[in-house]
Image (cartoon, rainbow, N blue to C red):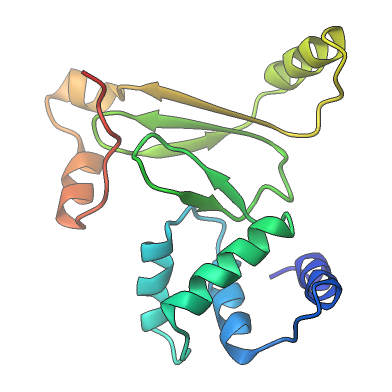
Length: 166
């Protein structure tokens, strides 16, 4: 976790009249140990592998607190689950490409989208604060090769898949 994240969190906790707890600190450390997207269940599984003595209730309260503090962002990847993204602070213009077959998520940035976003919002009388885009597509792997290693690995790991709209 960066010192900036720690400082923002500590300031926010004090403003809310809360105190630092070892359980919350353990959850925060796990969240910000990588910049991977995760669900609450994913986080719970990671926590179970540590010495943290946190409850699910503490986990959910911490996720809510971090989201309210602007340190975590809830994103919709099209799988009917809340997914959290810990790296919006570094990259407020944030986009995701989601494969509807295997569930692979690719995060990307594009300066052209930022310019377009800026032009559209200004023309309509707004000032852009953040931008998020989700593109659902089929990855080429399955179509061209007849099999997708991401799909096979995801099924082996029991990962969730995007909900296909029929």
